Length: 276
Image (cartoon, rainbow, N blue to C red; front, side, top):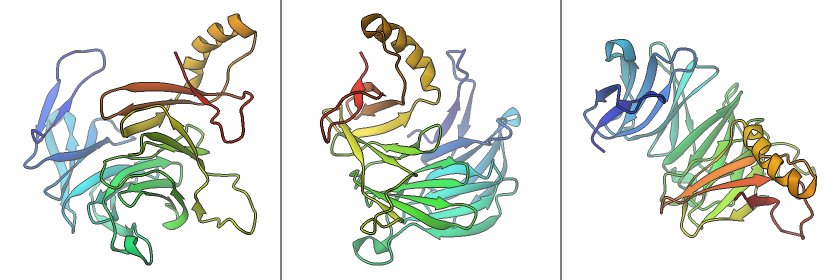
């Protein structure tokens, strides 16, 4: 809110550097191949690539539609993706920030045809996940910019919520304004005639909060946590723990850690449980 980007190192308590902007900064991302550079997006519509050692802007460009709301890199840093308030994703070359193409993140008809704010971007290989304020999560193939699947279930009408991939890319997780955490599969969908391959409304959800869930992510290395839990569980039951770990937080500041593992459950019951 102070129109700056602040840089820290995990081993030091003080701020290393402050990068001043002319408007509110909504998103930042390090360049994947060279962390001396980072990209910032702000409400003035400017996309800035900063060179940290010189504390200066190396190159910048202005998005056609102002109000940048999300950014990320795809194809191992070759292109930068910029999400905007009116439901578009612009692609720019990372080295010179030259315009490459644009994708309209909207439905072809109905109330969502006008486009809604892009609230989050996530990448796994050639998959780009776009979260927006029409309560939809769309997955694109960045090789041809084709929409491969649309995920429904979570409520995201007014918040800055974004979906995230699991480490193996086979699942996605997202917070929701209805206080649940939602999880979908990205592969191995049923091949029945009643299921459209480009739509996925089959989800699992977990109620772990008493207020809207603002963020939910998979742990990048779940086995680190699993090893600690495994020692505790094996002492009690002799069984070995395995599965995904999800961390979620809500608007009150409450943070929960949930673990997924095979166990006997009733029909419709989640396999996730809250770790103590």
